[in-house]
Amino acid sequence: MASNLSSTVYASRRKELLALVNQLRAVGAQNDLDLPRITVIGNQSAGKSSVVEAISGITVPRDAGTCTRCPMECRLFSSSNAWTCCVSIRIEFDDDGNRLREVAENIFIGNITDKSQVESALRKAQFAVLNPEISWDKILESPIEELKKLVNAKSLPFSQNVVCVDLEGPDLTDLSFIDLPGLIQNAQPEVVQLVEDMVVSHIKGNCIILVAVPMTDDIENQKALRLASQEDPDGRRTIGVLTKPDMPPQHPNNQSI
Image (cartoon, rainbow, N blue to C red):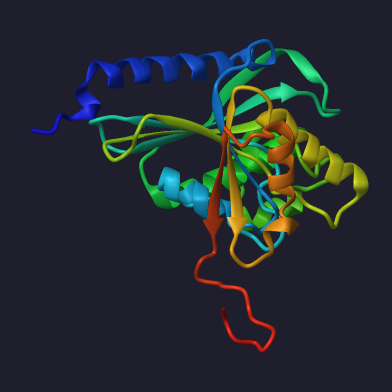
């Protein structure tokens, strides 16, 4: 008779350790400790959102071009309770990208019980991270389509501060991972470098690197794989995930391979 892994001592210890790591990250301990983590990376439009959705079971924002503009830390917890979601924001850096001495993680939108509301909550949370001069109350009361009207000269193109998503429910497993902005090429050099530096800082050390690789492009064009190989030359902690299998590359005679 197969045992129920979720009720074993191992599962209980795993849940405790995961909760401890999340608590340490919430207070900024990752600046001093090489905490274990899973990081999802990929080139812009590499299908990374599909990977995140497949793991978490939620719908994340999708737009043409670059949509993810700050790290998203997704924390899943197995529970017999009904499915719930809480979105928080963790401020680790100031507007100039300097690390703060004190890290603060505060709830942005709590007690979401309808999965259809998660995408808009994530959009507003990211907007709050990129627009620190605008009050949360103003952002929360504004419709999604009106947010662009609030953008001002102090808005940030990208941020290292984190949108945290806590998911709890009976169909989830105990897991935590970080989704990073896609690597870009067609932007100002300092912005391109900012995103690359952000990715490199997250995949160093005690990290499993999950690389989204689209089947629509040559693997040699994937900058994310190059960065992963630089930090993990032996490939011992890198996992490639093939995306966009429904969009195979075209043969020169315009026939799908």
